[in-house]
Each structure stands twice: as C-alpha cells, then as structure tokens.
Image (cartoon, rainbow, N blue to C red; front, side):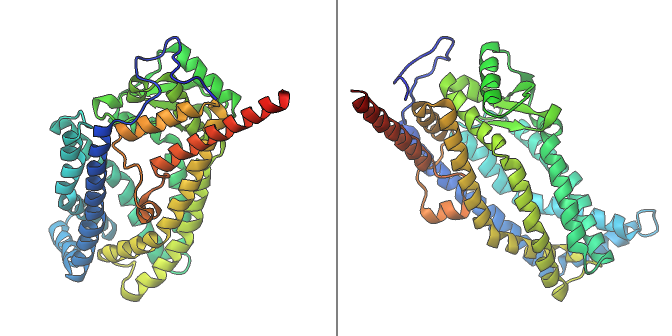
Length: 403
C-alpha cells in the first residue's frame, strides 16, 4: 500500500518506518506493571478504605459536628455552608492520604523511566491546581445531589442525572479552552505545509471548518505524545502535542490525526455522552434505593456511604463501557487506515507510540477487559498488518486478472 522506508520533503529527522527497541520493550514491561499496580492500590485500597473506615468509625459524623462547633455563632453557621466546608475538608484529607502514591506513580516512576521533564516544584503546582479545580466542580455537584435527594425524595435521581448530563456536555465542549491552558502553554502550528495537509485531510473526510491547529507544549512536562479534536463549531480545534510533532514522521502524524478524525466523524464524543447519560439515571436510582436503607440525604456526613455505593455500581458496569470503548477505538483505527491508505505508517505510529509511552504490548485478556479502554497495542498493530496483507493479496489478484 505504501513505499517501505520512504521519506518525503520536509519530513522530520526520525527513523521511518519505526521498529521496536528491545531495551525499551524490557523497560515497558516493568514500568507498565508498576503503574498498573500503584493505580489499583491508590483507587481501590486507599480510596475505598478511607471511605469505608471514615464512615463506619463515625469520623465523617465527627467532622461535621466539629465544623459546626467551629463556625457556631458566625454567618457560616448554615447547613449548606457547613456541608460545603465538610466536602472540601473531606476531599483534602482524601487527597493527602493518596498523595504519597501519587508522588511515587506520577513523579518518581515517570523520572525513573525518563518520561517526565518536570521539576518537583512544577509537578506540585499541577497537583495543587488539579485539586482546586476538582473542588470547584465537585463541591457544588455533591451539594446539588444532596439537595435534590433531600428535596425530591422520589425523583431526585432524574433531576440529578439531568444536572450531571448538562455539566458534562458543557465541559466536553469548553474544557480545552478553559482548563487546558491552565496546565500547558498553547500556540498555533507554525508549519503551514503540515497545517494545510492536516486541515485538507480533515475536511475531505468529514471534519469541516477546522479553524485552528493548536500545538500543546507538553514536552515541558512529558515525553509522551498525543493528539485530539476538541470542541464544536467555532470552538473546534485540532490539538497536537509538540512531542508528537518532534518525535514522529509526518506520515505517522497523519495516521494519528486520522484516528482522531475517526472519533470525530463517528461522533464518538456524543456517543459516550449519551451512553453516560443513559447509565447515570439507573445508577443514581439504584444507588438511592440502596443508600436510603442505611443513610440519608438529610445529613452530609453520609457522603462516604453514597460514594461507596456509586463506586460499587460503577465497577460493575465499567467493564462493559470499556468493551464498547475498545470497539469504538477499533472503528477509529479502521477509519484511519482507509483515510491515509498507508498501513505501514499506521504500524510504525503504533510501534513508536508504544515505545514512547512504555506501554505493555500484550496484557492478559482479563486485564484488558477490566481496565483497557483501547485495544492492546499488539492487536492494533496486527490489525493494520493484516489489512496490508489483505490489500496486497487483492492487488495480486487484480494483476492476475489484468494479465
């Protein structure tokens, strides 16, 4: 389908096509497992243990009463203000308890495997920003859910689901304009030739009116590479990590962008929004039925119990949503193959991405089912190689017919 080892005018000075580096593969096997197990320890052991122990021990109740004692006699002595203070303090405690693991996984490991370029100070600033941003969004959302649960005992789940669906829709459309600049420097792509090729490719295959191609200065923080289409209408942007531009051959860049185009053309963002919206209503309803057996929306100290129930239900449906996500990723991969018509470039891009990200090529079937929202890298590579083999056989058959 394409010329092996070809190079084009204006291409970056990188080896093409890319082949796996044996030493990098060895590092990836160790790194990916360490990241996986520290992530499981943080999300399952630390988070769930803190929620469980703080509720059963009465600590969450004690914390609410302590806050009331401190603010008594002031303008802060109001149920919802006390509830907001509780949510913020409780969130801070949860963050502090998991901070050592976050530091090990997000700073120590990333530096040990030469994936991070951040100083400890820069990493800490990002952590603090992430925490306060989460507080800004989660505090009113949690209070809103408890207000609705307390006010509308039978239909709270419907109103809460609508609230979460609307907020998610707004954030998915504007987060790249508001949140992304808080963590990365951005600039428009200066390479006019590449910009024109990418925009032309996008418009020819169904992504209309891409007004800006924005370079995300991720290289200041990480060696990892990425790309994405974000926004709608006038907010539509093609986002490219500078690491992608620096480390990948132009053909590989086009393949990666074509994959992201596949998501956009297939309306995958909208699909997942609708699926999340459809799932959140029964999740809220079932969690409310279970929650009110032991707890109550009338008291905010029952929040840990509510979160435990939500987490439990989410864990049950998460493998199904990840299975669907892998299916959509495969569709986007096939779209990219049809768009660039260059399976060698796709294979090369997949291999380079796997090495740069130190991704495990072939995780166990059960790990992939439970935790992967993308197909395992080896499967994506084999799919592209099989497509190339199929096209080669078809070309040979056509040549025989012509003769």
